[in-house]
Image (cartoon, rainbow, N blue to C red):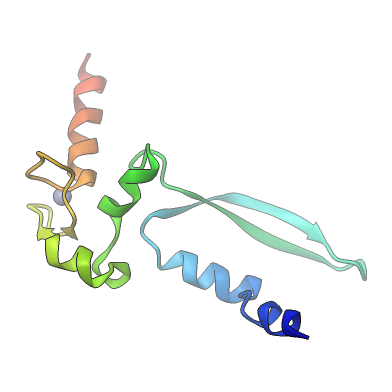
Length: 110
Ligand SMILES: [Zn+2]
């Protein structure tokens, strides 16, 4: 009987994609057509984390926007030169987005 309750907590595909759209860590990587049991076809968007920015699981915290930060993360977050409120990576004076774009710029010049 308890299993009925846990099913309800799973978000519907619609609410899930609207949630993911608001998440700055997530990028849309395409779509797939899914055929349902009754034969109707629906297009589902596929999402992935932004792997240009987030290369390790630990780095997820550094790309969180203030709206999804925990109170503890908010406390240690700082405003970056780019205007984003972020938890900075250790020994860094800029957010991970700026850190990655600097590294990207250097590799492109080589
Ligand atoms: Zn920045």
